[in-house]
Length: 254
Image (cartoon, rainbow, N blue to C red; front, side, top):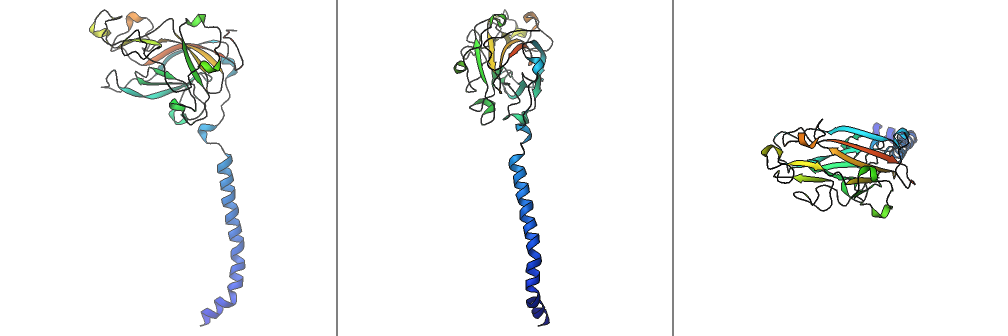
């Protein structure tokens, strides 16, 4: 009985004490929610372009990792990502960010695509990239194409119809049985040969441009006569030139 009287007598006091705590609780929840909404996720943080990389000829050597032991030549591989504007590999955790410009995937990681929110590995992300393969030598590619000519992630560029398993216009010839370039030699089967007269033009994830020439996918090996089925690969060696959004041509100023 005494306990009941005590609770009844002090109920107003207890309610009054609880109000400040409730107010503080709601304020804390509000602050946490505000932080969640306003603070960008790590993969969405804006990374400034490296200005010194524009209008220069840049060479990338041996970008890639060794395929898992026991993989067959036609096994699809998880993608690798590269930023042309940062000149560095990008961690897959940033797949849906605008940090990367090129993806390398599928067999030999030899299918190359752009970073666009509409399709490919950048789907539903923040990239606005594009990719176009032209039948021109790298040094002859001067003019930047109109934006409506670029693919926007819906299909990657890979094997050319001049080789085995061609998928239309591609950046390399695949000599599956060594009957095209390898003279039928067993150790020259499954070799990939970049086509000298085919150049990739890329609209980066942030809307700038680059022309790209793949030189080799074999580690430390640049001459086709040194490429064999057991050569360490795929390790991409390529060169590129960046141009600012709004440019009409590729220029090398340094």
